[in-house]
Image 1 (tube, one colour):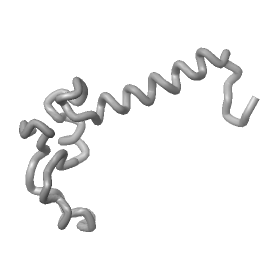
Image 2 (cartoon, rainbow, N blue to C red; image 1 turned 45 degrees about the vertical axis):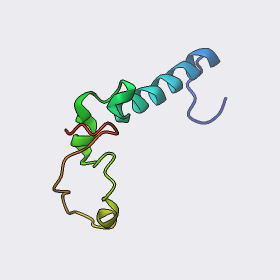
Image 3 (cartoon, rainbow, N blue to C red; image 1 turned 180 degrees about the horizontal axis):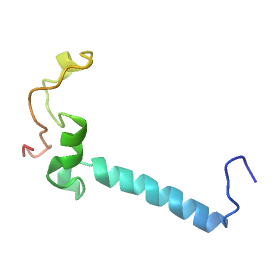
Image 4 (cartoon, one colour; image 1 turned 180 degrees about the vertical axis):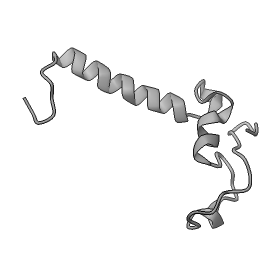
Length: 77
């Protein structure tokens, strides 16, 4: 047994790892793929989404981005 493992059967240990990963992917996914309903997760973390003009904001720390999130389809949060 490796450090940090609880002694679960491999099937159970792997199940929860996969469950956590797919939950994260769905939470932060583009809404057109079925997760992140109304871009709420992106709005929560101030992620701009699929904006093409975000490059100049990448290195601005502790400055709130003034525009909302946009999905690949062009929907706005």
